[in-house]
Image (cartoon, rainbow, N blue to C red; front, side, top):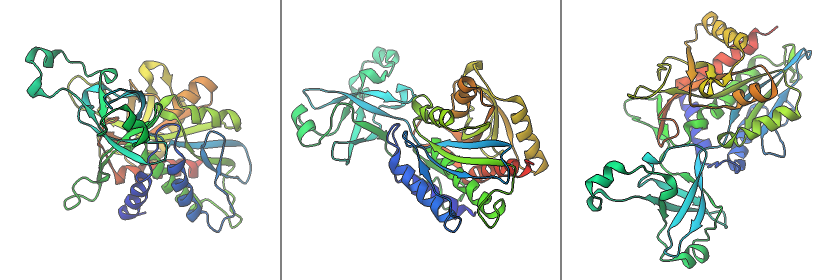
Length: 367
């Protein structure tokens, strides 16, 4: 798939916002893209009661069942309080820090299903003493959202915003500098739009190369392709899916952290050096299956796919939780991404393609 087509897919997915627990709009776009690929194969795209979207390919025998996962949801927040003044207090929906929130534009989903614009307020430096500027911690619980309402009644009756309403962070989704570079993308929800797009590329490769005329895999295993829900709030979708389906091995596709700022903890992952094989996460409490990680590296070397090794300290994933809590051998492949859990995040179209190719070659090698 060329870069224009990859960008079309990820741009399409970005048009449907997906706060954790409300992923259906994005899931339906994912389903539509899969149905185009599967049009003449007689294979259905299904959903379960936790709104995971998935397709199953039956193998020529069923020695084992493999599942490839990527989550659909994105970080955001939830309205916690509506003040008499019309300002809104909020809680996190997913993990992030308060230091980048001041003056951040957001979109709140109201009772009528419409997105209402808001801005997270913070003290202006023109009105804040120097001592307080240095001490300010930017705790989200101390911040407020301004939507333009004059009071609480207007928030409720005119803007139709309620306590419990979700919000996501606003911005543009685009090529960073289209005139100069056709590869670097910038936007919200890169975590995990890049991986969701990677699942489409992977499915396309499987359908074109690993299926027989009846739509069955020519490999001795069954295969699930799964777009999961609620990853940012505790990997609920992946755990639910793995508990309710017989699965022997999991590979999750997510982001790989590109960090080079002073004070950060990283594995020196580079933006353009290929997908990341993650060996460990969660400050040492999430250890992936060693042999599966090792095999993925070997497959990358054998197929001349650039790849990187990673250990992600302050990070948790669908694969990590399934490995830890259910004992299913799992691994994590990360697409290199900068500024994770901020807006915008930065990634590359090449990175999406390379990660999909690595997993495809791994599946192809299994006999």
